[in-house]
Amino acid sequence: MIISRLKLYNWKNFQNIEIKFSKRNFIIGANASGKSNLFDSLRFLRDISKQAGGLQTAVFERGGIKKIRCLAATKKSNILIEVDLFDEKLNELIWTYSLDFMHTGGGVVKSETKIISEKVFSFKAGKWITDRSEKNKNEDIETLKYTHLEQITANKDFRDIQTFFQSIEYLNVIPQLVRESSSYSSLKNYEDFFGRNILERISIMNERTRNSYFKRINSVLKIAVPQLEELQFHKDFNGVPHLEAKFIHWRKGSKQTEEQFSDGTLRLIGFLWALIDSNGTILLEEPEINLHSEIVKQFPEFISKIQRSKRSVRQVLISTHSYDLLSSPGIGPDEVLVLQNSAEGTIVNKINDFQEIKALIDSGFSIAEATIPFTAPRDIQGINQLNFNFFEQ
Image (cartoon, rainbow, N blue to C red; front, side, top):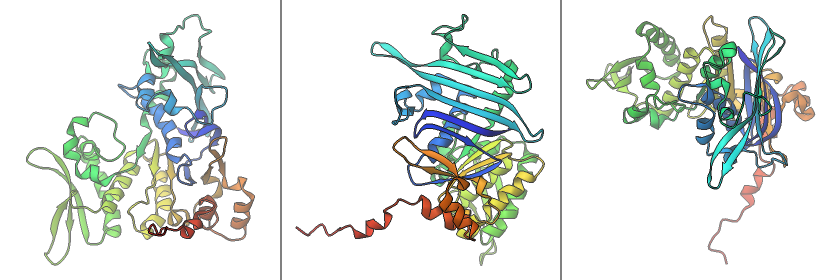
């Protein structure tokens, strides 16, 4: 399955939006327009669904409802997330999941999250198979603290949704955390989005599968990283997992571990591993960081090639500022989502919704040439007119 539609109401930057996704989307916009917050709405559904997760925990980890609710919220203070799930093999919609919630308590009463409604629509059955709210006789203030999504006894009729949300992956590798991964062994059972536990995850994988993955990753690294002959996995005498690369140069071959790898090499390895290992929806945060522009230019076609393989990631959503990534001729206008700040919160549109961008593309401009200047801060050139002579009176 893939996420085909996302509706957000009062979620962080987004006061009221509805987005239609495809198997591959590039999400662009100015800084602070909400790209990361858009991804976080999907991570939120994963956090509710995963083991040791749940609604209360997911809200608490984000600082509570006050930190989640959109600053542009009007009279209504509730927050709603709704998604459609589409089976790309059957070419039909399968599920709609909707969660509406709000803050309750405060003062001497513990602050918590209360469900206003939780609904599941089955397109196969042609009806809402779950429809929870305060109006239901079987619900009370305690039961409405917990979603059916997080309860295996309650979600048996739509457990596919829980399984799907659990498979959502977010990746934004921070190289320093990978290098210091052995210092974070106590966190190995926690969700990791920044590469901190990537070596631990590799270590528990079936050896045959791991070797197969490394074979594919090596085929890319040999081309992209000069003098790298082979990347391997091993454990040191203390049992700590490491990446080890053999480089060819005048010393007739030497080995380095992840502690000596460049930031770009670590981010590229994380990017490749995520695409090969995932078989659901993956959220990639600015994968171009630290990488050479010629490598970045290959990403769109490489992602499509991975998606076409038999067992592979099904949906890739990418946030980016990269001119090089968006310059690929294989990217279609319907794959690019543009985020724009407004007084009513961030709005989201596809390229074809902007006449000026569409006109540029129709006249022969690439998507990068048409969209990057459009998303830049309007008066950005003005920073060069500022006076930084602090000694002038």
